[in-house]
Length: 292
Image 1 (cartoon, one colour):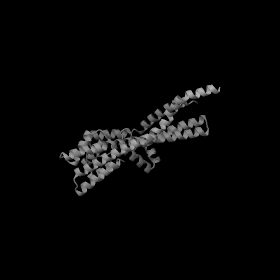
Image 2 (cartoon, rainbow, N blue to C red):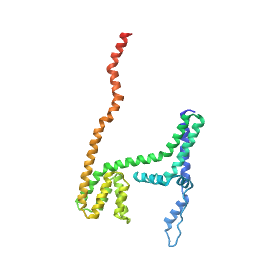
Image 3 (cartoon, rainbow, N blue to C red):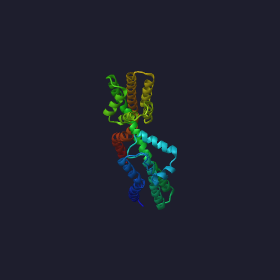
Image 4 (cartoon, rainbow, N blue to C red):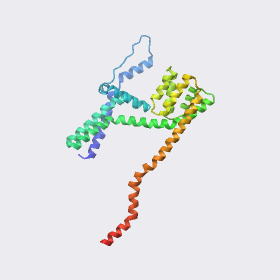
């Protein structure tokens, strides 16, 4: 069978597997119970219906180790917990994609049982199983880069607000409202944690745990120490903003110094051969004509 046929088979199998997984993971009874409870409210002494998880989700959780599930949850936290991919959906979709990959690999091996096709079938199975992990991890890396890029400007906004007479939480709220990136979302979530009654120290620690940026972690540590020892928050913000700007300048200089090394290989592979052909081509043609 040609590769085009296999692509057509994969284009058919993957959507079918996704539809089956979607139908299998919908908890209709749970949704009905939630809507009923929201509509009528919880009366005193009323029993709350706790539904069992779907069959596919239960089997997937049994097959997934606890440490691996915790790692997936951490990656989702770094990615901002997208609404389209919750943890339960991520755990349930991995076996479905792995099964689809194994089915495609078995068909591939059956058509041509050579070592190359066997390795290719195993590679497809492993790739489809870990494909959601790669997507979530890549999303988390890009989100943390955006946080690191926005951090100095956000600190400047908070410093201006504090120096204008606002409190620290009011400055956080102003920066989260007027900001539009992932850092503003994290600040808003921290404020929401404080408003629902979570201690400030735990809310700040949760903010540091949801980010891998060292500047955010050092900022949270400085704020916690200032809150503990009674240090002026304006001085802390001024020092942190200055340090963040210096680090941003240093990173820009570092990238500028790495640029010639990164340009060297495309220059050698793409520009120099064409240049040599243009310069030495006529001389080589003349030499060939003379000796022929």
